[in-house]
Amino acid sequence: MPPETGRMRRLIQPLVMKALLFSALLAGGLLLSDTPATFAQTAPGPATADARPAHREARAYVQQHVLPAVREQRRQLESRLTSADRAQLAIYRTQLREVREKAHALRQAGRPAASTAATPGARPALSEAQQQQLQQLRTETKSILANVQALAQKYTPDINRLTQALKPRQEKWATDLRAIGAKGQAETAARPGRHHRRGGPLERLLRPAAFLLLDPNAPAPAPKARAGSQVYPNPASATTQLAYEVTKAGAVTVELLDGRGNTLRTVARDDRQDKGPHTLAVDVADLPAGIYFFKITTRAGVETRRFVKE
Image 1 (cartoon, rainbow, N blue to C red):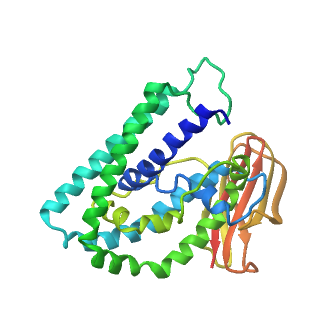
Image 2: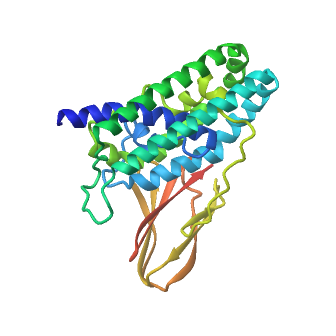
């Protein structure tokens, strides 16, 4: 690795990780920006897994299952805070959001123009001045987080009590996320030099500073309307319905995968299906409780959809 590339990575990584973790927490949607690859280290999956769907699915899982529970606990802390501390927290949130926006702008400025061919996976080429700006943003982030940490110490007993109540659910969250993260194994294998912060994202979320920063009154992100497959009911018991869209008429295959991405059986194979919505009833009564996936292969590509068997 060229010295300048290594230096730029050391500048960018800590800043991005901290800014994404804390300021994105405030928005409630980007907590698991690195979750699939993180959990993929301990949960091997198929080498050909599509990491991006796993990335999106992990974020959706946290939004649906983790953040509401953590935010509910955080609401109980709000009444314990002084009005001055609540106001100061609002300032810290704004400052972290601004740091994140500046870092994002720098990364965008370093990307090649649309007319320029870019090497897939290549990092933005930043000038010396931009690297210095990133270093300054990193220093600002560390200073803000140090202030948050100091403020959190005032409420350590209350924070510990509230986060401890979530411990029984953490194991299930971690198991589910590892299963989702197994599909990101290909991304991890392709980036052997990637470093991961100690402690999983769930553990980091429940640390005092992160817990204190979480805005208990932030509106939950509205689910995005999107075309694609859906599984219902989910969780399933005896049978479940898979609804999917065929965008190009042709052959369609639907396979059932276990939580590690291994094919258990083919549940449907059709040499030709017309363009449009389709629904498939699948008997899952024989499956042990756990995480599973449907893999839908059409002329337009491959899509996976996760479901839980109770």
